[in-house]
Amino acid sequence: MVWISFLVASALLALSACSGRGDGGGGTGPGPASSFAIGGTTSGLSGTVVLQNNGGDKLTISVNGGFTFAAALTNSSPYAVTVLAQPAGQTCTVANGVGTLAGANITNVTVTCAVNTFTVGGTISGLSGTVVLRNNGGNDLTVSANGSFTFSAPVAQGSPYAVTVLTQPAGQSCSVANGTGTVAGANVSSVTVSCATNTFTVGGTISGLSGTVVLQNNGGDNLTISVNGSFAFAAALINASPYAVTVLAQPAGQTCTVA
Image 1: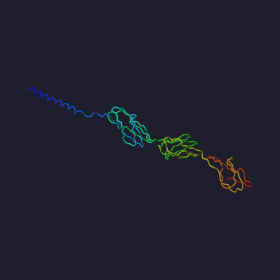
Image 2: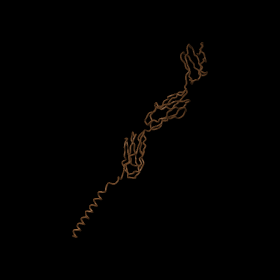
Image 3: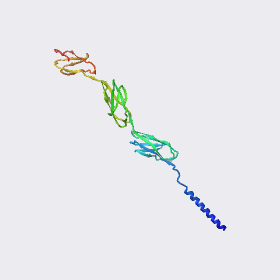
Image 4: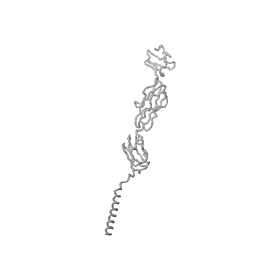
């Protein structure tokens, strides 16, 4: 009986040991994730941008939408997403690009790209009143002083500009030089607007002349005429200036009168 009891006890011991190993194996599951991805979305991109994370993991992107860096990071690691190379003619900015991993993938990094824009302007000289300039048929600028000027609306990289005079100043005419072109990665400051007071010629017609007559305007601008027809004095006059045409020297054997 002693021997039988010993066998029973041994069997129970063995079963107990097997049961313990089975329970322990069933309670073991997968551990927490050891690494996490860094990514987000890109919008407004029209070319190719190169991003980098933590100064080393580079990612080239050519389309808008979601992106993910190749290198995953362990939990509690810092991340810092920056733009390594801007797309041609655009500038991309990063939002939510810096942080520390906290047990989950990062998907909220936002990269927003926009076309580069530049100002259009130049200098104006000779102005004595007020002139209204216009760029590209819509952006108007009123200028009342000589010096530099800049239109309020910037122009996108690669886009044309065309500066014209919309309204001339009273008694003056302004002309534009270097007013058209294409924005090429820099502000345009070479547009030149030159204004001058309007001038007018004084002249008329002569008839019955058989010799040579000398006319004079304002006591100084002499004009010798030997044929009938139209004539004009060389010196132009500004608006609102007086003029007085007289005969300085009569033709031989004739008398000319001015009306």
